Length: 307
Image (cartoon, rainbow, N blue to C red; front, side, top):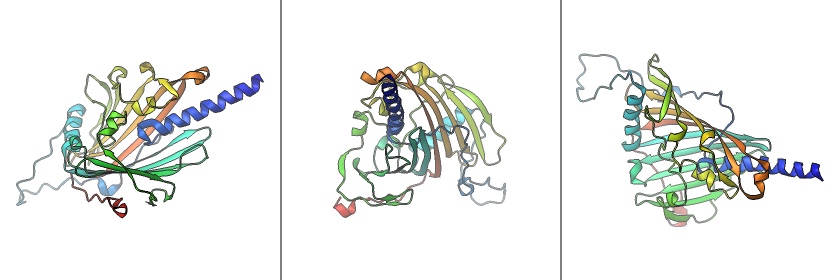
């Protein structure tokens, strides 16, 4: 009987970790492969323009040269947050003993983050076991801030999908009232007082690269709301949170090219699951931006239902 009980709690522990990984960032990408570094596709790295004194174009603003990583981030984040729009891909995987959860998300936005409108999120999930989700989730927000959302099992991973039923409807800002995060923003505040600079590489021809580690007490209390919304999670000890972020930013125009979130933390299970003890979670999330400060053509995927 003791053996069966231990086996039961071991299975529950595995399921709990997989469940929490699925909740993290409202279903964004998590992985335990922290030694993998993303490669920026060649076509999205702008070339440094030639110095042509005879050029007739005198209206282009010169990109500043940065020797301070935090000032660089402030410059780039302003473009990301308040620019004309962007197109990016978030990709990765979540691994547990019961299998692997692969994820791939298309992100598009027009206008500033603070508009809370005119954006699109298409999130594919593919699990290697029956305990892990395999589906596509589509969130479309129109220019009025009305969000239409639906999920489906009918899809080709990272390529196409079919929605069989009419979407649910709410305001995009209603996400925040339910504890969800704005996936179109960067929620960590990166300053010298909130983080530690690991390195700042200015040797690359076309882009800067730097890495920071967040101070534990600087991680916002609502940062892990998607995890804490699980009925199986009691809380996350602040002193178990470790977050590093690696940024790549264009030297040509200051556009954000990519960032990687590498996170570890522990969850304290709730109720009867408290018997299994704290569970460690490791997230590895890669965002790559193909267009920045550029208006996007965002089509409503729910027009077939009359929306």
